[in-house]
Length: 437
Image (cartoon, rainbow, N blue to C red):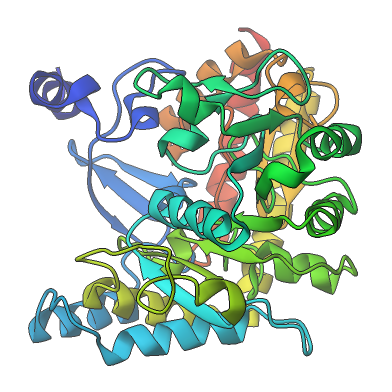
């Protein structure tokens, strides 16, 4: 038994399932999770001293690479001044300004006000409360397979029809709360039209991942995000664009900015941010127009508060990460993502494995289907059993992947030629393992 096994045994005796976030338990791939002891650049080291080239990137935040010296120094400097104050700080203002300045396209600036919180779940939960307060309506529309955190109203499962009220998607979620959420198929304009035709005057908001990355990488069809905004606004509802994962990872202005650059113009009412915005520290945010955001307390009637909101260590990490996330950094990550996604495609093709490799900006992932899925129902039909042997083969060769076929792969600026070559060299054996599953 190695150190990871013994740690997992001990963890299960004191932590439910031995982990503090379910996907870490390796439930979909089997085996013992790696307990990480340290990370630097593009590599992580487990409790037994084994080193891996990392394509998890802390589930996205490590845009620059792990333990970037300038980010670490900023956090250490902030810690020396005090861990938290429960009072406003200058850093909070600077980070809010940075977020607002980055999320723009020409004269279009959807973020005029920013509220800092601690987690992505808190950001989306607050955004929904804010949308309900701003519209005076109760119902929320979400898409099947999209993940927006674990608050009660967002753990809703699809009902029996396209426009029926949802059912609880988790034990502990009261049916009346789940019933305030309408779950429809993603990338389906007819479903969107139908839900508004039946419930339009009761819908407060539509919440959507800017590009889905929690059922595998599933990009919005051309024009779909714009259609959501236009349909919501036509019926007096708001659009909440969830960029907790994509924000500042795929473009300096997030996936919204990437779409503006590509000619798809729309303006969400509220955007949520997380992961990269905190530089690896616990921090998230929501932003939107002044008219909407000023509905939050203490100016408006929608209550939200948090003792650790705007924590100075997290703010320091976020500021430094965003300042270092230059266009050159994004160009490097985009090039590496293109190279690796191409190598992944080639390896699986050469091994005769039915698959597709989907992209959304520099996010990519594999689906064991002949074509990239466009919604959750299709994603669930893939030969997902092929992923576990693929995953373990890569791990045995020193490459750490997200432990689920339904997660995105994350490239970092720290991935250099040595790391890219090593990943490419590992892919053929992993593809062969998938083929023999």
